[in-house]
Length: 532
Image (cartoon, rainbow, N blue to C red; front, side):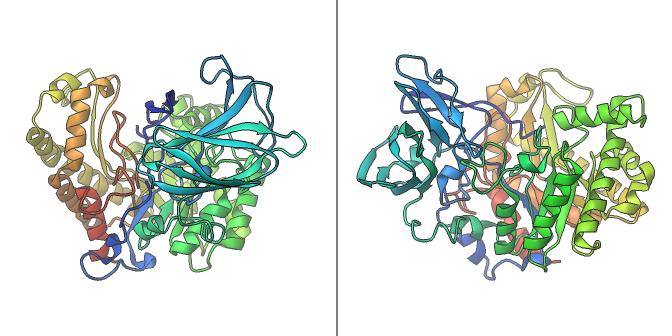
């Protein structure tokens, strides 16, 4: 329901950019997250909480990498005298670097379009022979320039463009890096922004669903995978080597979502990289794709079709539930073979917060006996469309509510329902001898089915997310999860700009702190107070 987020328009340097998801500055003083309330956060192994990291995009507002080119958009082709983005098809190498430009043409990519990036002197490093230019709504002044290195004064808070004006086909420009102010000497050894590391240090698990661009992924063969040498991580996702490096630095367990099209060879090679590189004290969580029941995702359609072909059921949704269990077990066996057993693995079968879906998946071909955890998404849900339901008002009616009315409804109806779902799913998990986990969790106030276009309701939902009572709801929600016997809970999500498609980020911008967002403060405080 979330994540296939929307269109945000960022206007930079006079060009209108249609972004495919809501956006979104590296941290200000987020180290307060570790020092507030006295003691620092518990060691990851003792924490009950995980976090879903926001996906790679030029509008990402978390800024996990000090090299912001890692989150650049795929090259946009331009031709003099033609409309924006209407240049000829670009010829690129396997890693995404432009090999040749036609006369009167150039390639460009937007950076930091979510805003709130630091301003100052960015260092652009590159290999090859060519000409690079920077433009932005704010200043983009070249301080110094020599072959392979530029220093540019940039107003990062408003975003900017990198333009490739010329490239020599015999020695084309490649390996471009755009380093945030102050990190030129350390970026190669320490690629992650220290505030990003500080924010999530102390969490048990990092779920990489969006980093892997799992939903609708076209990655199938091992040869198709993203690699560290890629021009951008926004094309196919973040490489496994980078994800494991982050997990090792934070001493946090990684949670990988295997692409739904992945071959056995892909799964085997991915598992080998994890086994070779992951800190032995950490455990890899393995899940087949993401929400293989949600009709908005390509993986659900695929699983349904494959399940019908295999004769698992006549109805595609039932066949899809069963196929996801079947394929999950196949992949678990590959991981077990590579790891030489199950000791360093957590094999996860994810389900909808509905008893029949969980039961169908777990009992199909004894899948429950071959996994470790049932994972659900027990959101505090209030999903409103333009049509009223039996116990739901329509978007127009909700738009007329006061903020107190909305918060009262969430407290009296949505929150208790979520806790009941936790308790019901825990009974199912217990029946099969499994741990109950939450692959995603948090508030779910959002418009859908046309409701997202009710601007007054969106503003109301965002006001609720900023309200101190939302922090109180999160505390009660987490207490309810613990009381129900829930195990790991991965909050959705880390940092991201809010839009009509949802207010998913615990923070909107990475320069916010606990005092800025009550729900973020509640999660951090709960994590400190509730070691396992």
